[in-house]
Structure formats: C-alpha cells, structure tokens
Image (cartoon, rainbow, N blue to C red; front, top):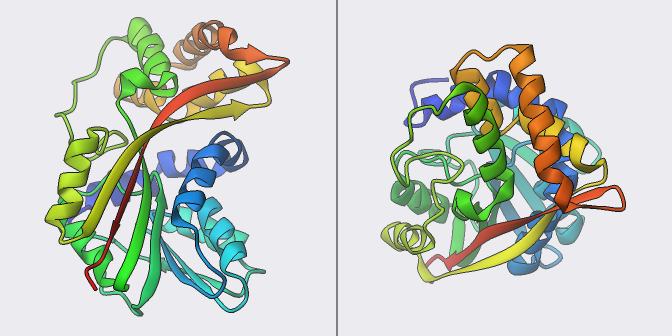
Length: 283
C-alpha cells in the first residue's frame, strides 16, 4: 500500500495489537455488544439500505448492519488494517450483502458511493486530520445520508481505560502522556470538539450525546483482567516498558481485585461512558 496519512495507525493495527484483537474477537464482541446496539439503534438502518462501516475491525457491527438491511441492501466493511479486514471478511463469507474494502477512510477513493448510512463502533478516533476524514466519509454518502458513530468519552469516566492504566503504571511507571485530542482511542473524547470536527468536515445536523452502557464479561473479574492485559491501556503500558510476563501477571492480579466490585453472579459489568455522534451530508 502506498504512503498514507494514517500509516502509523495502519502499522499499529496490522501488527501484534491487531492480531491480539483478532485472537480476542469473541470476548470483545461480547463486552462491546451494548455499544454496537447503541450505534444500530441510533443509525436505524432500513431494509435495502446501503451502509458503510468505518474502521470495521473484526466485523461485528458490519454483520449486525448486514442482517438489518437484508438481502436487498449492502454493507461495505472498511478498515485500514489488512489482518482485521481479512478476519471480518471471513466472518462475512456467508453474507452476500456484505463486502470489504482495505482503505484509509481519510483519503479513500471510494469505489462506490450513494450510501444511506455511515456507521462506526470505535473506528473513527484515529485520524490524523479528522475534518478531512469526515469530509471524505461524507463523499461516500448520498445527499442527505447520515452517520452514527460511537467514540469513547474521557478515560476517567471509563473503568475499562482508567483501571488498567492505573494498575500497569503502578507496576511499570507512567509512559509519556499523549497530547489531548490526538489520534488514538480517546481522540474524540471531548464531545464538543468531536462535533466541531464533524462540522469542519462539511457535515450538517451535527449532534452528540453521552450515554452510559455496560461492558459485560460473563467470565467475571479474572477474565476481564486477563483481557485487559492483552489489549487496551494496560497492554500499551506493558509494551512501552517492555514488561515481562511476570509484570503482566502482577498487573492482571491487581486488575482482578479492581474489577471484583463490578462482578455479580459471575459476570462483570463495567459502566462505560460513550459519545454517540450523529450528522448528515448536505442534501
């Protein structure tokens, strides 16, 4: 693939981190189910709609959308990571109304346009130039076409981010703090800035609201802790400091204790604050 504006993101999600998400796909789909449901409820696709999923990852949201639009509709699952996209494509092999496209959504020359909806579950926070990316996503839509994106609210409002970062930093130290609102999982945490970036991309009817959902892991505190040393904030700290397996095990033990208060009848339910962003392309 030629040089692209978001090459760092491509390399990150095509390397060990992306492979970890693939290996943990079933767990992640389970804990993110409420987020996907919120996006689908907000987007409200109709039978026969054309939908583009931005940053589709392993394809969970694309599959939900494909089921909603039915045989007369179409879902284009797009991602910058080839391994993630290949996995999404494998999951959609028996879904004829779903196809995939390897693309940097900030600059993609869309092979087809006229989509009714653009959707995303945590796939739009990584752009180096968000207004340019949103403008290019809008080009894929038909006039009046809509978007419905989910992005993380601030880390301090999300135990899924705050507790693993705290546990890993207590063991290994604090890595350099990223610039506020820079590309990354929390790149659209400021809901007012997120809406401004959509407007700067030429979208109208821009809206944003914070909602609370729950990240449910049926394996309990220990299973959630294990997941969080493999992906997310703790894993980033471990990687930065070249943490050992012993470090990872100690962090996992700390997280098991931290998640225990959120466990009921064997299931952990972490409250999560999410930004739901909506907008439309001018008619």
